[in-house]
Image (cartoon, rainbow, N blue to C red; front, side, top):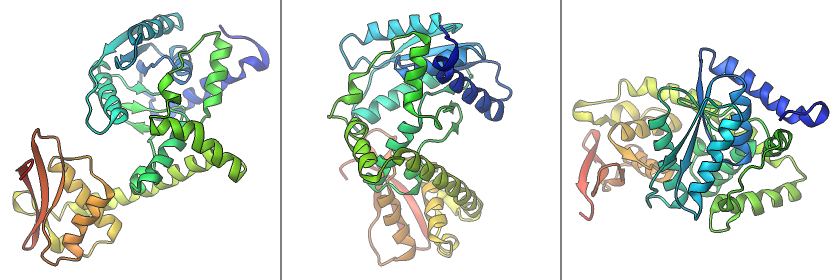
Length: 327
């Protein structure tokens, strides 16, 4: 329930934020979905979204914690009470590849993509989530693409709250009079992101005098803008770099500036079925172009079961071969 005066300001701020976002990024949308976990960020987003367009809440039950079905059912009831036209619980099985956090994220987005029925999906990530993502990328040395964080628009995924702090969504839930779910994984020290949230970021804020989360988010925005330009240059360069049989012509990519050349290589690898690429792998493959001394190929991840891909130099071209795992 809305309340007048200053107490309602957090909810009004979120409504304005979503309205402006929708006008700029989703001007033709006549309905949308919201990824609802039951936590304060997604509950606040669901409430304001349902007040603007017909909204379907999609609740993913990862089945990783006792009572998860009850949490999902409560989130569904909450979504309907907040004005959603529909609310669906999506039950998934989480694998193990890439660690528990990555596996859960993969299962979640796969389920959301299958259930959205062509509608855009709003996700409740906030500025705080963006700051955590940048820190994760920084600690892993993943390169500028990872440091660029999450995109506000990555169709069909849309993140209208990336510019607001998590505290605002908590305050909005208080205005609504709802009691959001608190995910115990968010404070579980077994998970890297949880430790960043509860230990690392607070310490950085203390040591650096505040404003760290906002600074990290600004860094992500700047790098994302730079990345978009470099990606466009790489796409243009890649058009003339492909040789017969899906190979990559060394002579075409060698003169390119390093950041552009490595993007061409990354795109070529992804087109060939590579998955889970790291900056280190791409730089090793880049060395097959810039520092060729007869070295062997570089193995990269593949979506194929029991097979891997190997990028290798074959005379004047780079080739991507599929090999059995263990070869």
